Amino acid sequence: PNEVAIPANTDVTFHLPNDGAAPHNFSIDELDISVDIAPGETKEVTITAPEGEYEYYCNIPGHKEAGMVGTLIVEPSTTWASSERPL
Image (tube, rainbow, N blue to C red; front, side, top):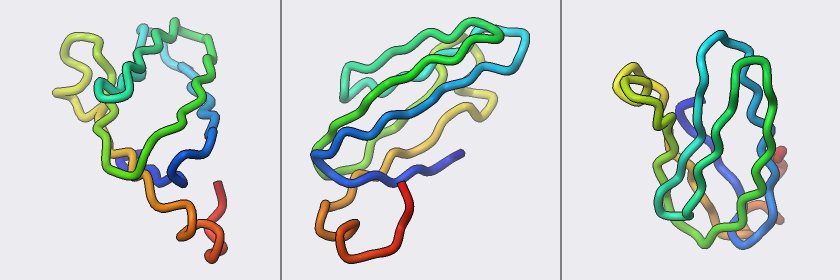
């Protein structure tokens, strides 16, 4: 997806499947996250981040330019506690 929202300062685990034939990567520079995912493999990464917006992308050459990029929106935990938004 090109945008994902999570609550701030809360462990959120992302499942990162690569169903394609080429290697991929999940990177968030500001959070020091870089996960390589081989074809046919699924990796997990748990993110705990302060409130803000962070760019995530695939760091394989040409993939970000091809549109493999999005925004992680980390919202105040109180927003999540008072809403019905699923994780």
